[in-house]
Amino acid sequence: MFLIGLFVASVGVAFSTKAGLGTSPVSSVPYTVSFLNGTFSFGGWLNIFSIIQIAVQVIILKGKCNYIEIAIQTVLAFLYGYLTNFSCFLIRNLNADIYPLQFMYMVLSCFILGFGIWIQVKGNVAMLPGEAMNRAISQVSGKRYENVKIFFDILYIGISAVLCILFLGGLKGVREGSIIAAIAVGSIIKLYEKIYRKCRGRFTLLRQPGLEGEDHEKK
Image (cartoon, rainbow, N blue to C red):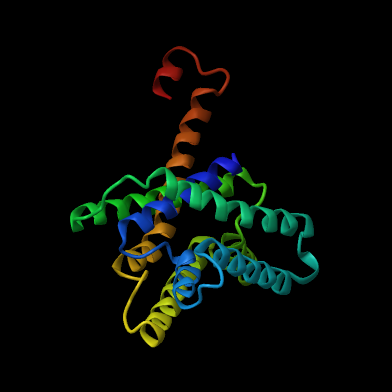
């Protein structure tokens, strides 16, 4: 289930790059840095950024850190980079040469990315470093995970925008799509969770023993 969520999230990132209106917030910083420094590819900088996020988890969780999960995150971070490249390859023939189509791809990327992250959370095996860092901060601070995610998504966009303006002379890889994704993805995750709980509640009622005849019809 987790691996499915990992792949789905990579497809969401691929659609955001295809839209050309800005990448997903968590990918925006390494994507921007890849324009500034060609030492590594976008995937390479994404992996380096993931290592930094893993280090933050170890620091803030201290003795409560699950080092087995940290090791899994490290492996999955590199796997995610390859999956993202693969997802970009899969949709390479899609065209986005007009703004309405770009905007549609951008909205679609938000829903796909949010769904992928939600599946990863439900898989409860491990999370990608960025999301796991948000979860760790949520646990330590007592803030809701979704709200922590929204905060850091906006922060990533801000950092990317500043780097673009200072060193590239304009916004490149960070546009209105990045801002919309920063605000929307966390809310989309909440929506998926709400739908899941509602469907699960109805399914539980239908499977309750002893509900027969008229009582069963009412339920």
